[in-house]
Length: 239
Image (cartoon, rainbow, N blue to C red; front, side):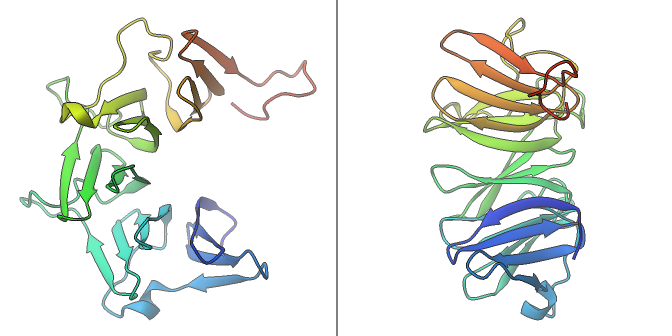
């Protein structure tokens, strides 16, 4: 229903879930046919935004949909839970503009917002635990613009945000995430990290805005950047 595709996820029935700025679609990977999913058909009492920015199909077979006006969770029985920012409520989202979703190895759902950091939802509680970039006294929205997550071992999580890459270690039970020490190769000011993927214990891929693709090798403590090179035939197409 739209040519602007924001996010993708695969369910356990061999379907590809396609989130667009005009709603949610389901592509059968068996028949290669599309179907538009109307949340209103599932629940007449729930009307989320059609501008879908993130999708997660979790280990409990719940479908999570992050939009510009909140987060919805479609349970296996097709009932829906709604999560929104509610002023003066501790157990609520810190912001309704949801940019990213992720499930960690413990089954917790991480919710990345546009300007208010991260909420981690314990599915057994359920209760949100908010995490922000709080080394500075002032509130800085760009630090708390969360674009992507990736597992970093059993307890840690990489976070891609408006000021680069961060590493959060759940064992420390910190309420903030911070850049690596000053002078570290991936601690370069002035870049926005849009995506992150740890493919091995030593290899980290970082997709940036206008700074190309970065590959960091922690064993060698070296960073390699791939940028558009008009002189080369095989080059990345955009930074």
